[in-house]
Amino acid sequence: MAKGKEPKEQDSGAWVIRDIPRETMHRTKIAAAIERKPMKQFLLDLVEAHLQEMEKKGLLPKGK
Image (spheres, one colour):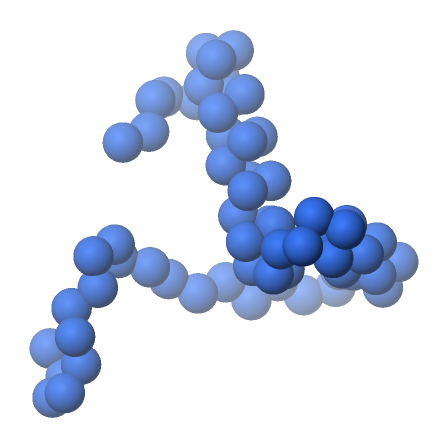
């Protein structure tokens, strides 16, 4: 572990997603603002909801 860094409870990573249509980015930003959420939280909530739906349908193994 790097000097002076606290261990994180949950391991995390980083994604860089390219070529997102500007209109999609704009609409997503508006939707996040309406829900009063940061973009990161808004997108994480969307992904988690979709993953849970896939798990219910049996298309994806249950997560931790």
